[in-house]
Length: 185
Ligand code: HEM
Image (cartoon, rainbow, N blue to C red; front, side, top):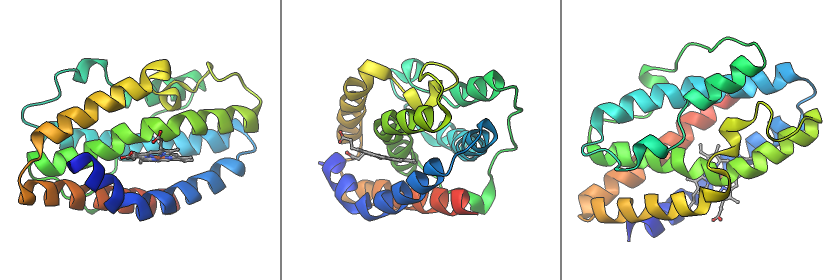
């Protein structure tokens, strides 16, 4: 099944990204530092969502229930900050077909799993409640594992052939790498 393969074949890049983010989050000293992290996620994820929406055919049946970068805009607005410009072109992974779009979506949806830890870390660093200005990282809250299971079922049903699965894995790895470059840059 592709969901198991993509997990195994992207785990190195996930670990690298996680390490960078943990370091960044631990160095948060002010709301301004948190806003910088929200900006990194907004510009990259919103740019990526545009690309994905152009190529995901058919789209997810429960797309309306899924987390959107609009949640980051809400968190930015909570702290009276403006949304930044979007990442574009070579700053983003190459997404030219449905299976590459699925690979990028795997990374976005999977980030809800780490989001729980991220929101707890940020709330501790800033000494603010987890339900204030942390809606994006809170993800789907209690429903996170169920939403993740549903996404993996969909992925497993869509990407069956070897070349389809190769596109998913390549795009997921590129998404992790480009996002790592983005947050480091
Ligand atoms: C502080 C940062 C992060 C931490 C601590 C973290 C932690 C985790 C943990 C614990 C899981 C496994 C959850 C489970 O199986 O129950 C997970 C899964 C995942 N995370 Fe992260 N994560 C972080 C950041 C990110 C980011 C920024 C992204 C994407 C941009 C991401 C993408 C994923 C993906 C795709 C999975 C799913 C792996 C699978 O296929 O099971 N993570 N993360």
